[in-house]
Image 1 (tube, rainbow over the protein chains, first blue to last red):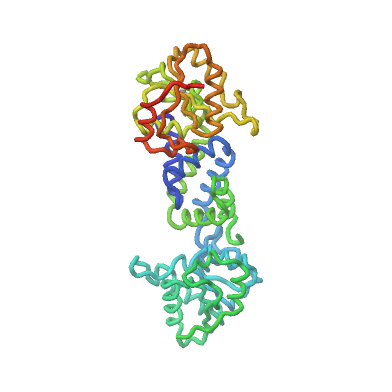
Image 2 (cartoon, rainbow over the protein chains, first blue to last red; image 1 turned 90 degrees about the vertical axis):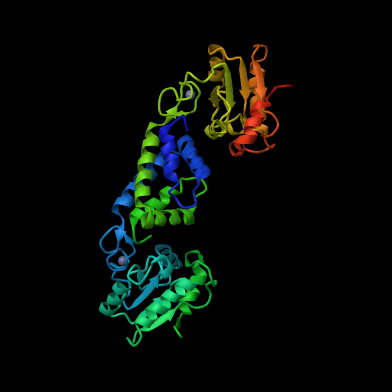
Length: 200
Length: 200
Ligand SMILES: [Zn+2]
Ligand SMILES: [Zn+2]
């Protein structure tokens, strides 16, 4: 844009958001400049604070503002049941369903050898250590019902073979091939209550 | 989110972007945190600089980093031809078509009595002053081919009745009811070249 290097840079920067192309970035920039400058300033501060301050929880790998996150740090949450999810949005969906009161472990991905994502990249050793140290009696493998999610669940289950820990998988109710983060709370609660031991 | 007030605030702030709801804001926040932290920092800076530094050009009303924008300030652009558009994205579409070398006036809207937008809100007096002072010989009314855009064009044309200035409207080629900002450059160039005097 010949008329403003500041607007140019704003449009260009907005394109780092997922699903935002040139036209959408322009529309967003003009909207902020015309009608939502205070919103733009607030977003600038929130971005700067989050990019600087958000790290990984040392216990569950989820995003956290502190060394150990609020869920891991909550004495009211049972450590005996550990729920393994792929992403923070999956954790969030389960939290919003409101029924589960155990702990979590967030893989931040799933096994995907073709993309170079192996057990180390998703923190499997850390998970196994935590299972051993925290006296976990049940491990709920709530990875997505996709090919990669299933493979990841089976890998973890194999690694814990003979450990005596009950390993479960969420019950039917989640649409096959769907994304856990998009399931409504009611379905999710049912899937939790109907979870079953993993069978080979 | 129980796990991070910083992430909460980021998600909430992203919702000031047009078309971004809760789920999309979450997806954007997690994407930035997981894979694009430097992009997030860059966006934070760009937002802060633009919200603070972008103002309106005193001559054409378009967004500008300086008192008078780069287009108004360019001696190679003819002041004799003035093109009136509704928004910066319309101006941008015409600039990207590359054929037009005159000046612009950006209304930042169109007449819409039902929304309380009258001649004053879109700078009609400033436009008429500029037309008088700059020795404009042709005024191209490139408002959108919508009901409000047509009404705005007719209003401006009426106000200049008897001034001896040639008043034109873009030629056929723009889809009726469409948004000028979404027309391809080729069509736009043709519409410019085929512009015709406004007939009542
Ligand atoms: Zn944690
Ligand atoms: Zn200007």
